[in-house]
Amino acid sequence: MVRDIRRSLTPDEARQITLDLHMCVNCPQQYVQAMAHAGATRFIFQWEAMKNGFDDALSLAVNIAEAGMKVGISINPETPVANVLPLLEQELVTLVDVLSVNPGFGGQKFQDKVLIKIDELAQWRNINRKEFLILVDGGINKNTAPLVMKAGADILVAGTFLFQHPCGIATGVEELKSKACK
Figure 1: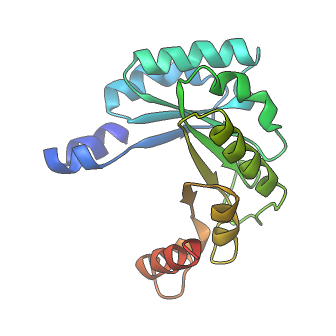
Figure 2: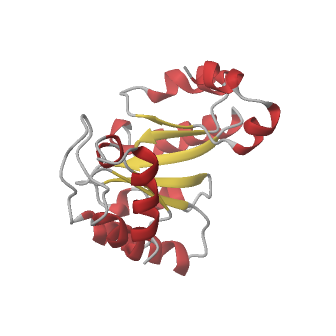
């Protein structure tokens, strides 16, 4: 799919489009080269898939970067931010994906406890002068968007809210933008 999306783009579109892949799989290292060749921009892997924690995560992050992709890390709602800070200190990670629902299916309720994690990441980033984006994925709607933006999120991922919006996806996007920017 990544290759087909990349091939369907004009050269101008290809320069403007970011293809972020959230690889919520047990052995993400198996997919690095294939996704790089397919044209992925950023490879986001799940911290919880790292059996040996930091060592596995660092090795994978280096492999992703060497393959020519940006590196992202995703954490589940239960995972402490402190677990990923040593990896963020290496300055390989360009995005942290804070899951605000448990992985698996759409339509779940936003877990408020992640607001503390978003704030903690944003503060750590500012204090340590690091440059990575904070993405929040799960349960994003017109009520939760302003909360996560205030906590320090840079990017929001919304699925159910947009696909089930009564006036269509485009209207839902505009509604989220207006709420998130308040």
